Length: 475
Image (cartoon, rainbow, N blue to C red; front, top):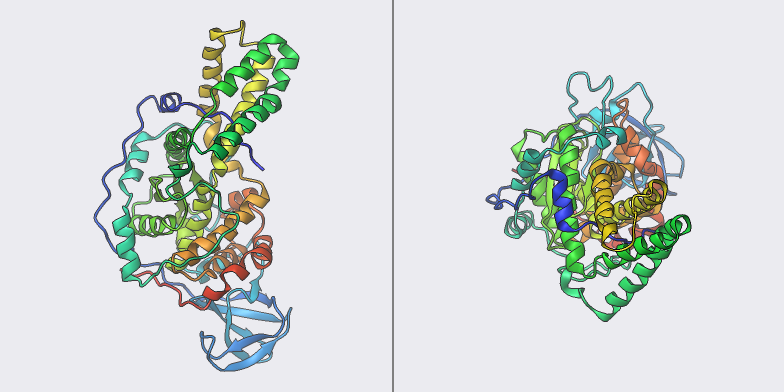
Protein backbone atom coordinates (compact mmCIF):
# COMPACT_ATOMS: atom_id res chain seq x y z
CA UNK A 1 0.00 0.00 0.00
CA UNK A 2 2.76 2.44 0.95
CA UNK A 3 5.28 3.95 -1.44
CA UNK A 4 8.70 4.84 -0.12
CA UNK A 5 9.51 8.46 -0.93
CA UNK A 6 12.34 10.86 -0.07
CA UNK A 7 13.31 10.93 3.60
CA UNK A 8 15.38 13.43 5.52
CA UNK A 9 19.12 13.19 5.57
CA UNK A 10 20.73 12.02 8.79
CA UNK A 11 21.93 15.51 9.64
CA UNK A 12 18.45 17.03 9.27
CA UNK A 13 16.83 14.44 11.49
CA UNK A 14 19.49 14.85 14.15
CA UNK A 15 18.68 18.55 14.21
CA UNK A 16 15.18 17.77 15.43
CA UNK A 17 16.54 16.96 18.87
CA UNK A 18 18.99 19.82 18.79
CA UNK A 19 21.86 17.45 19.41
CA UNK A 20 23.55 14.40 17.97
CA UNK A 21 21.82 11.05 18.35
CA UNK A 22 23.19 9.18 21.34
CA UNK A 23 25.39 6.24 20.48
CA UNK A 24 24.08 2.82 21.53
CA UNK A 25 25.25 1.91 25.00
CA UNK A 26 27.07 -1.30 25.70
CA UNK A 27 24.67 -4.15 26.27
CA UNK A 28 24.14 -5.15 29.89
CA UNK A 29 25.25 -8.54 31.08
CA UNK A 30 22.94 -11.41 30.25
CA UNK A 31 20.19 -11.87 32.80
CA UNK A 32 17.30 -14.24 33.03
CA UNK A 33 14.01 -12.56 32.13
CA UNK A 34 11.77 -11.64 35.01
CA UNK A 35 8.81 -13.79 35.89
CA UNK A 36 5.52 -12.96 34.25
CA UNK A 37 2.71 -11.94 36.56
CA UNK A 38 0.58 -14.75 37.87
CA UNK A 39 -3.02 -14.82 36.66
CA UNK A 40 -5.87 -14.10 39.02
CA UNK A 41 -9.00 -16.15 38.69
CA UNK A 42 -12.19 -14.73 37.31
CA UNK A 43 -14.99 -15.80 35.00
CA UNK A 44 -15.55 -14.60 31.46
CA UNK A 45 -18.35 -15.56 29.11
CA UNK A 46 -17.43 -17.14 25.80
CA UNK A 47 -18.85 -19.19 22.96
CA UNK A 48 -17.45 -22.14 21.06
CA UNK A 49 -16.01 -20.96 17.75
CA UNK A 50 -15.50 -24.24 15.90
CA UNK A 51 -17.56 -27.36 15.29
CA UNK A 52 -17.08 -30.45 17.42
CA UNK A 53 -14.66 -28.96 19.92
CA UNK A 54 -13.29 -31.56 22.31
CA UNK A 55 -13.24 -30.65 25.99
CA UNK A 56 -10.23 -32.41 27.49
CA UNK A 57 -9.81 -33.59 31.04
CA UNK A 58 -6.45 -31.83 31.31
CA UNK A 59 -4.64 -29.09 29.41
CA UNK A 60 -3.02 -31.59 27.07
CA UNK A 61 -4.09 -32.72 23.58
CA UNK A 62 -3.59 -36.38 24.57
CA UNK A 63 -5.79 -36.26 27.68
CA UNK A 64 -9.25 -37.94 27.64
CA UNK A 65 -12.22 -36.11 26.14
CA UNK A 66 -15.02 -35.38 28.63
CA UNK A 67 -17.41 -33.65 26.22
CA UNK A 68 -17.79 -32.45 22.62
CA UNK A 69 -19.27 -29.02 21.97
CA UNK A 70 -21.01 -27.61 18.91
CA UNK A 71 -20.17 -24.25 17.37
CA UNK A 72 -21.94 -21.45 19.22
CA UNK A 73 -22.34 -23.32 22.51
CA UNK A 74 -22.02 -20.95 25.50
CA UNK A 75 -19.25 -21.62 28.03
CA UNK A 76 -17.75 -19.86 31.01
CA UNK A 77 -13.98 -19.46 30.95
CA UNK A 78 -12.72 -19.86 34.50
CA UNK A 79 -8.99 -19.47 33.99
CA UNK A 80 -6.19 -19.63 31.47
CA UNK A 81 -3.67 -22.43 31.84
CA UNK A 82 -0.87 -22.12 29.35
CA UNK A 83 -2.52 -21.90 25.94
CA UNK A 84 -5.68 -23.61 27.12
CA UNK A 85 -8.85 -22.28 28.72
CA UNK A 86 -10.46 -24.08 31.63
CA UNK A 87 -14.16 -23.94 30.74
CA UNK A 88 -17.48 -24.91 32.22
CA UNK A 89 -20.17 -25.88 29.73
CA UNK A 90 -23.84 -26.68 30.25
CA UNK A 91 -25.05 -28.70 31.93
CA UNK A 92 -21.97 -29.73 33.91
CA UNK A 93 -19.03 -30.43 31.61
CA UNK A 94 -15.77 -28.99 32.96
CA UNK A 95 -12.45 -29.29 31.21
CA UNK A 96 -9.98 -27.66 28.84
CA UNK A 97 -10.13 -26.37 25.27
CA UNK A 98 -7.42 -24.78 23.17
CA UNK A 99 -7.30 -21.03 23.37
CA UNK A 100 -8.29 -20.60 19.72
CA UNK A 101 -11.37 -22.85 19.91
CA UNK A 102 -13.60 -20.37 21.75
CA UNK A 103 -14.15 -16.63 21.53
CA UNK A 104 -14.34 -14.57 24.67
CA UNK A 105 -17.20 -12.10 24.92
CA UNK A 106 -16.43 -8.52 23.98
CA UNK A 107 -15.48 -6.18 26.77
CA UNK A 108 -18.44 -4.28 28.17
CA UNK A 109 -17.99 -1.01 30.05
CA UNK A 110 -18.61 -1.53 33.75
CA UNK A 111 -16.51 -4.60 34.57
CA UNK A 112 -12.83 -5.34 34.72
CA UNK A 113 -13.14 -9.08 35.37
CA UNK A 114 -11.25 -9.83 32.20
CA UNK A 115 -8.30 -7.75 33.36
CA UNK A 116 -8.12 -9.35 36.81
CA UNK A 117 -8.64 -12.80 35.33
CA UNK A 118 -5.54 -12.41 33.17
CA UNK A 119 -3.32 -11.11 35.93
CA UNK A 120 -3.30 -7.35 35.53
CA UNK A 121 -2.68 -5.09 38.50
CA UNK A 122 -4.06 -1.62 37.80
CA UNK A 123 -2.87 1.25 39.95
CA UNK A 124 -5.40 3.09 42.14
CA UNK A 125 -7.76 5.08 39.96
CA UNK A 126 -6.92 3.28 36.73
CA UNK A 127 -10.00 1.09 36.88
CA UNK A 128 -12.10 4.23 36.77
CA UNK A 129 -10.43 5.51 33.63
CA UNK A 130 -7.05 5.39 31.97
CA UNK A 131 -5.70 8.25 29.95
CA UNK A 132 -3.53 7.24 27.04
CA UNK A 133 -1.69 8.96 24.24
CA UNK A 134 -3.51 10.97 21.64
CA UNK A 135 -2.41 12.43 18.36
CA UNK A 136 -2.66 16.06 19.45
CA UNK A 137 -0.64 15.33 22.57
CA UNK A 138 2.16 13.85 20.51
CA UNK A 139 2.13 16.77 18.09
CA UNK A 140 2.90 19.12 20.96
CA UNK A 141 5.18 16.76 22.90
CA UNK A 142 8.77 17.65 23.56
CA UNK A 143 11.76 15.40 22.99
CA UNK A 144 13.11 13.57 26.06
CA UNK A 145 16.68 12.76 25.12
CA UNK A 146 17.55 11.48 28.60
CA UNK A 147 14.74 8.92 28.41
CA UNK A 148 15.93 7.77 24.98
CA UNK A 149 19.46 7.32 26.34
CA UNK A 150 18.06 5.32 29.25
CA UNK A 151 16.05 3.17 26.85
CA UNK A 152 19.11 2.48 24.72
CA UNK A 153 21.06 1.33 27.77
CA UNK A 154 18.49 -1.43 28.22
CA UNK A 155 19.53 -3.15 24.99
CA UNK A 156 20.89 -6.67 25.11
CA UNK A 157 23.18 -8.24 22.55
CA UNK A 158 22.86 -11.42 20.52
CA UNK A 159 24.77 -13.39 23.13
CA UNK A 160 22.30 -12.57 25.89
CA UNK A 161 19.37 -13.48 23.65
CA UNK A 162 20.96 -16.77 22.61
CA UNK A 163 21.79 -17.64 26.22
CA UNK A 164 18.17 -17.05 27.18
CA UNK A 165 16.98 -19.29 24.33
CA UNK A 166 19.34 -22.02 25.43
CA UNK A 167 18.11 -21.88 29.04
CA UNK A 168 14.49 -22.03 27.91
CA UNK A 169 15.18 -24.82 25.38
CA UNK A 170 14.00 -22.69 22.48
CA UNK A 171 15.18 -23.89 19.12
CA UNK A 172 15.27 -21.94 15.88
CA UNK A 173 12.80 -23.37 13.41
CA UNK A 174 12.64 -22.90 9.65
CA UNK A 175 9.21 -21.49 8.82
CA UNK A 176 8.61 -19.96 5.39
CA UNK A 177 6.87 -16.61 5.07
CA UNK A 178 6.02 -15.57 1.51
CA UNK A 179 5.12 -11.97 2.38
CA UNK A 180 8.38 -11.28 4.16
CA UNK A 181 10.05 -8.17 2.72
CA UNK A 182 12.88 -9.02 0.34
CA UNK A 183 15.45 -7.04 2.25
CA UNK A 184 17.90 -9.88 2.64
CA UNK A 185 19.70 -11.36 5.62
CA UNK A 186 21.48 -8.61 7.46
CA UNK A 187 19.35 -6.12 5.55
CA UNK A 188 22.11 -4.24 3.76
CA UNK A 189 23.36 -7.24 1.80
CA UNK A 190 21.03 -6.47 -1.12
CA UNK A 191 22.07 -2.84 -1.43
CA UNK A 192 23.09 -1.79 -4.92
CA UNK A 193 21.70 -4.76 -6.83
CA UNK A 194 20.50 -4.06 -10.35
CA UNK A 195 16.93 -5.00 -9.36
CA UNK A 196 17.01 -2.56 -6.47
CA UNK A 197 18.36 0.28 -8.60
CA UNK A 198 15.64 -0.25 -11.20
CA UNK A 199 12.98 -0.29 -8.50
CA UNK A 200 14.34 2.93 -7.00
CA UNK A 201 14.37 4.65 -10.38
CA UNK A 202 10.75 3.67 -11.00
CA UNK A 203 9.84 4.78 -7.50
CA UNK A 204 11.55 8.14 -7.95
CA UNK A 205 9.58 8.77 -11.13
CA UNK A 206 6.30 7.85 -9.44
CA UNK A 207 7.02 10.17 -6.53
CA UNK A 208 7.77 13.09 -8.82
CA UNK A 209 4.54 12.58 -10.74
CA UNK A 210 2.32 11.67 -7.80
CA UNK A 211 3.31 13.95 -4.93
CA UNK A 212 4.66 16.96 -6.78
CA UNK A 213 2.39 17.08 -9.80
CA UNK A 214 0.14 19.42 -7.82
CA UNK A 215 3.06 21.78 -7.32
CA UNK A 216 3.74 22.02 -11.04
CA UNK A 217 0.10 22.76 -11.79
CA UNK A 218 0.10 25.69 -9.36
CA UNK A 219 3.58 27.05 -9.92
CA UNK A 220 4.61 26.26 -13.47
CA UNK A 221 8.34 25.77 -13.95
CA UNK A 222 9.12 26.30 -10.27
CA UNK A 223 7.07 23.23 -9.35
CA UNK A 224 9.03 21.09 -11.75
CA UNK A 225 12.25 22.29 -10.17
CA UNK A 226 11.04 21.31 -6.70
CA UNK A 227 9.98 17.87 -7.93
CA UNK A 228 13.36 17.37 -9.53
CA UNK A 229 15.13 18.40 -6.31
CA UNK A 230 13.00 15.95 -4.33
CA UNK A 231 13.68 13.08 -6.69
CA UNK A 232 17.41 13.80 -6.84
CA UNK A 233 17.56 13.82 -3.04
CA UNK A 234 15.85 10.45 -2.56
CA UNK A 235 17.81 7.64 -0.87
CA UNK A 236 19.75 5.66 -3.44
CA UNK A 237 20.78 2.67 -1.34
CA UNK A 238 19.77 0.44 1.53
CA UNK A 239 22.52 2.10 3.55
CA UNK A 240 20.87 5.51 3.21
CA UNK A 241 17.47 4.14 4.12
CA UNK A 242 18.99 2.32 7.08
CA UNK A 243 20.70 5.50 8.30
CA UNK A 244 17.48 7.45 8.01
CA UNK A 245 15.53 4.83 9.99
CA UNK A 246 18.18 4.83 12.72
CA UNK A 247 17.85 8.62 12.92
CA UNK A 248 14.05 8.64 12.98
CA UNK A 249 13.61 6.05 15.73
CA UNK A 250 15.01 8.01 18.69
CA UNK A 251 13.14 11.16 17.64
CA UNK A 252 9.78 9.39 17.74
CA UNK A 253 10.55 7.32 20.84
CA UNK A 254 11.74 10.45 22.66
CA UNK A 255 8.41 12.17 22.13
CA UNK A 256 6.40 9.17 23.32
CA UNK A 257 8.66 8.85 26.36
CA UNK A 258 8.10 12.49 27.25
CA UNK A 259 4.44 11.58 27.82
CA UNK A 260 4.81 7.97 29.04
CA UNK A 261 7.77 7.48 31.40
CA UNK A 262 9.85 4.31 31.50
CA UNK A 263 8.48 1.84 34.06
CA UNK A 264 10.77 1.47 37.06
CA UNK A 265 10.98 -2.31 36.87
CA UNK A 266 14.45 -3.56 35.87
CA UNK A 267 13.33 -7.20 35.62
CA UNK A 268 10.56 -6.31 33.18
CA UNK A 269 12.95 -4.21 31.10
CA UNK A 270 15.52 -7.04 30.91
CA UNK A 271 12.79 -9.49 30.01
CA UNK A 272 11.29 -7.43 27.20
CA UNK A 273 14.71 -6.69 25.70
CA UNK A 274 15.91 -10.28 25.91
CA UNK A 275 12.79 -11.80 24.37
CA UNK A 276 12.49 -8.97 21.85
CA UNK A 277 16.06 -9.43 20.68
CA UNK A 278 15.59 -13.20 20.37
CA UNK A 279 12.50 -12.76 18.21
CA UNK A 280 14.19 -10.08 16.10
CA UNK A 281 17.01 -12.53 15.36
CA UNK A 282 14.46 -14.62 13.46
CA UNK A 283 13.80 -11.82 10.96
CA UNK A 284 15.71 -10.57 7.91
CA UNK A 285 16.63 -7.39 9.80
CA UNK A 286 18.69 -8.84 12.60
CA UNK A 287 21.28 -6.08 12.17
CA UNK A 288 19.06 -3.29 13.52
CA UNK A 289 19.89 -2.01 17.03
CA UNK A 290 16.63 -3.40 18.45
CA UNK A 291 15.58 -1.53 21.56
CA UNK A 292 12.59 -2.35 23.77
CA UNK A 293 11.02 -0.72 26.80
CA UNK A 294 7.94 -1.01 29.02
CA UNK A 295 6.36 2.38 29.72
CA UNK A 296 4.39 3.14 32.86
CA UNK A 297 0.86 3.42 31.53
CA UNK A 298 -2.23 1.41 32.42
CA UNK A 299 -3.45 1.47 28.83
CA UNK A 300 -3.04 -1.65 26.74
CA UNK A 301 -0.99 -0.91 23.66
CA UNK A 302 2.38 -1.21 21.96
CA UNK A 303 4.18 1.17 19.61
CA UNK A 304 7.06 0.81 17.20
CA UNK A 305 9.25 3.32 15.43
CA UNK A 306 11.74 2.99 12.56
CA UNK A 307 15.12 1.60 13.48
CA UNK A 308 13.78 -0.98 15.94
CA UNK A 309 12.47 1.16 18.82
CA UNK A 310 9.53 -0.66 20.41
CA UNK A 311 7.49 0.41 23.44
CA UNK A 312 4.99 -1.73 25.36
CA UNK A 313 2.66 -0.32 28.00
CA UNK A 314 2.61 -1.71 31.53
CA UNK A 315 -1.11 -2.39 31.19
CA UNK A 316 -0.51 -4.77 28.29
CA UNK A 317 2.68 -6.26 29.71
CA UNK A 318 0.98 -7.29 32.94
CA UNK A 319 -1.66 -9.46 31.26
CA UNK A 320 0.89 -11.37 29.17
CA UNK A 321 1.26 -14.55 31.20
CA UNK A 322 4.08 -16.26 29.34
CA UNK A 323 7.14 -15.53 27.28
CA UNK A 324 5.17 -16.83 24.29
CA UNK A 325 2.57 -14.07 24.66
CA UNK A 326 5.14 -11.33 25.12
CA UNK A 327 6.98 -12.66 22.06
CA UNK A 328 3.73 -12.52 20.08
CA UNK A 329 3.18 -8.84 20.91
CA UNK A 330 6.78 -7.97 20.14
CA UNK A 331 6.68 -10.01 16.95
CA UNK A 332 3.77 -7.91 15.67
CA UNK A 333 5.64 -4.67 16.33
CA UNK A 334 8.91 -6.08 15.00
CA UNK A 335 7.11 -6.92 11.75
CA UNK A 336 6.12 -3.27 11.30
CA UNK A 337 9.79 -2.27 11.55
CA UNK A 338 10.99 -5.10 9.31
CA UNK A 339 8.56 -4.02 6.58
CA UNK A 340 9.30 -0.30 7.10
CA UNK A 341 5.61 0.40 7.70
CA UNK A 342 6.23 3.51 9.82
CA UNK A 343 9.03 4.72 7.59
CA UNK A 344 6.83 4.53 4.51
CA UNK A 345 3.82 6.21 6.11
CA UNK A 346 5.86 9.02 7.61
CA UNK A 347 7.82 9.80 4.46
CA UNK A 348 4.79 9.62 2.19
CA UNK A 349 2.72 11.93 4.37
CA UNK A 350 5.62 14.29 4.98
CA UNK A 351 6.28 14.83 1.30
CA UNK A 352 2.59 15.13 0.46
CA UNK A 353 2.26 17.82 3.13
CA UNK A 354 5.37 19.62 1.95
CA UNK A 355 4.16 19.60 -1.64
CA UNK A 356 0.88 21.21 -0.61
CA UNK A 357 2.66 23.76 1.55
CA UNK A 358 4.94 24.74 -1.30
CA UNK A 359 2.01 25.20 -3.63
CA UNK A 360 -0.06 27.10 -1.09
CA UNK A 361 2.57 29.32 0.49
CA UNK A 362 4.79 29.91 -2.54
CA UNK A 363 7.85 29.20 -0.38
CA UNK A 364 10.14 28.59 -3.34
CA UNK A 365 10.75 31.88 -5.04
CA UNK A 366 13.21 30.91 -7.76
CA UNK A 367 14.63 27.93 -9.59
CA UNK A 368 17.95 26.32 -8.67
CA UNK A 369 19.91 26.19 -5.41
CA UNK A 370 17.45 28.55 -3.72
CA UNK A 371 14.85 25.74 -3.61
CA UNK A 372 16.89 23.55 -1.28
CA UNK A 373 16.83 25.60 1.92
CA UNK A 374 13.06 26.20 2.20
CA UNK A 375 12.44 22.59 1.20
CA UNK A 376 14.69 21.30 3.98
CA UNK A 377 13.07 23.68 6.46
CA UNK A 378 9.64 22.34 5.62
CA UNK A 379 10.90 18.80 6.18
CA UNK A 380 12.37 19.72 9.56
CA UNK A 381 9.19 21.49 10.65
CA UNK A 382 6.98 18.62 9.55
CA UNK A 383 8.93 15.90 11.30
CA UNK A 384 9.30 17.91 14.49
CA UNK A 385 5.53 18.29 14.77
CA UNK A 386 4.04 15.27 13.02
CA UNK A 387 6.46 12.32 13.04
CA UNK A 388 5.42 10.72 16.33
CA UNK A 389 1.74 11.54 15.78
CA UNK A 390 1.78 9.67 12.47
CA UNK A 391 3.00 6.52 14.19
CA UNK A 392 0.08 6.68 16.62
CA UNK A 393 -2.39 7.19 13.79
CA UNK A 394 -2.12 3.54 12.77
CA UNK A 395 -1.90 1.69 9.48
CA UNK A 396 -4.27 0.29 6.93
CA UNK A 397 -6.07 -2.77 8.34
CA UNK A 398 -4.35 -5.04 5.84
CA UNK A 399 -0.99 -3.94 7.22
CA UNK A 400 -2.11 -4.85 10.75
CA UNK A 401 -3.41 -8.21 9.56
CA UNK A 402 -0.08 -8.89 7.86
CA UNK A 403 1.80 -8.03 11.06
CA UNK A 404 -0.34 -10.51 13.03
CA UNK A 405 0.48 -13.29 10.55
CA UNK A 406 4.16 -12.33 10.61
CA UNK A 407 4.10 -12.59 14.39
CA UNK A 408 2.86 -16.18 14.13
CA UNK A 409 5.80 -16.95 11.85
CA UNK A 410 8.43 -15.14 13.92
CA UNK A 411 7.32 -16.72 17.19
CA UNK A 412 7.24 -20.17 15.58
CA UNK A 413 10.75 -19.58 14.21
CA UNK A 414 11.88 -18.59 17.71
CA UNK A 415 10.63 -21.84 19.23
CA UNK A 416 7.47 -20.48 20.85
CA UNK A 417 3.89 -21.67 20.43
CA UNK A 418 2.24 -19.45 17.80
CA UNK A 419 -1.15 -19.82 19.49
CA UNK A 420 0.13 -17.15 21.85
CA UNK A 421 -1.07 -14.48 19.43
CA UNK A 422 -4.58 -15.88 19.80
CA UNK A 423 -4.21 -15.60 23.56
CA UNK A 424 -3.20 -11.94 23.29
CA UNK A 425 -6.12 -11.07 21.04
CA UNK A 426 -8.55 -12.93 23.30
CA UNK A 427 -7.39 -10.78 26.23
CA UNK A 428 -7.86 -7.59 24.24
CA UNK A 429 -11.36 -8.80 23.40
CA UNK A 430 -12.26 -9.51 27.02
CA UNK A 431 -10.64 -6.76 29.07
CA UNK A 432 -13.11 -4.13 30.17
CA UNK A 433 -11.29 -1.31 31.92
CA UNK A 434 -12.80 1.95 30.65
CA UNK A 435 -10.48 3.63 28.14
CA UNK A 436 -7.71 1.06 28.62
CA UNK A 437 -7.88 -0.09 25.01
CA UNK A 438 -9.41 2.96 23.34
CA UNK A 439 -6.14 4.00 21.65
CA UNK A 440 -5.49 0.46 20.50
CA UNK A 441 -8.93 -0.04 19.01
CA UNK A 442 -8.78 3.33 17.24
CA UNK A 443 -5.64 2.28 15.34
CA UNK A 444 -6.19 -1.47 14.88
CA UNK A 445 -8.97 -3.69 13.56
CA UNK A 446 -11.10 -5.17 16.33
CA UNK A 447 -9.67 -8.30 18.01
CA UNK A 448 -12.42 -10.56 16.67
CA UNK A 449 -11.63 -9.49 13.09
CA UNK A 450 -7.93 -10.05 13.70
CA UNK A 451 -8.68 -13.53 15.05
CA UNK A 452 -10.78 -14.26 11.97
CA UNK A 453 -7.93 -13.19 9.73
CA UNK A 454 -5.46 -15.43 11.55
CA UNK A 455 -7.79 -18.37 11.02
CA UNK A 456 -8.06 -17.59 7.31
CA UNK A 457 -4.48 -16.62 6.46
CA UNK A 458 -2.07 -17.49 9.21
CA UNK A 459 -2.62 -20.57 11.31
CA UNK A 460 -2.16 -23.24 8.62
CA UNK A 461 1.47 -22.27 8.03
CA UNK A 462 2.36 -22.79 11.70
CA UNK A 463 -0.14 -25.50 12.67
CA UNK A 464 2.68 -27.99 13.25
CA UNK A 465 3.91 -25.89 16.19
CA UNK A 466 0.64 -25.28 18.03
CA UNK A 467 1.13 -28.25 20.38
CA UNK A 468 4.38 -26.88 21.75
CA UNK A 469 4.30 -26.34 25.51
CA UNK A 470 4.12 -22.68 26.32
CA UNK A 471 7.21 -21.03 27.82
CA UNK A 472 6.50 -19.75 31.31
CA UNK A 473 8.69 -16.82 32.26
CA UNK A 474 11.46 -17.88 34.62
CA UNK A 475 13.79 -15.95 36.88
